[in-house]
Image (tube, rainbow, N blue to C red):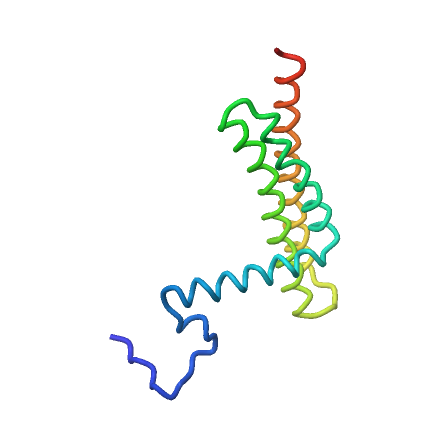
Length: 136
């Protein structure tokens, strides 16, 4: 049985000690800060602006709730993957500015994830546009 921490030992991360609605409230604040930090990244900002157009457009283009969910979801997935990629790059950059093969690999894999998310999104939108305008 692990020993319980002494009452005087504060956790390194105060979020770990929070529970219930207090934890949810603080977590939401951290998430908003993450979105603000993402907005400072050019790629995320471009994707967010595109989402402002594509998300409402998905309501018009989709013929069922499933199609709307696929169209909108594919756009949101791109933004999620971009935020994760930025997180990876930021963590790598914190380690140090010098070039390292593992750092390059991590950044390249994050970039590849964004590329795959973009290709998925484009494929779903192309199929929906084809279905709507050329297939009847």
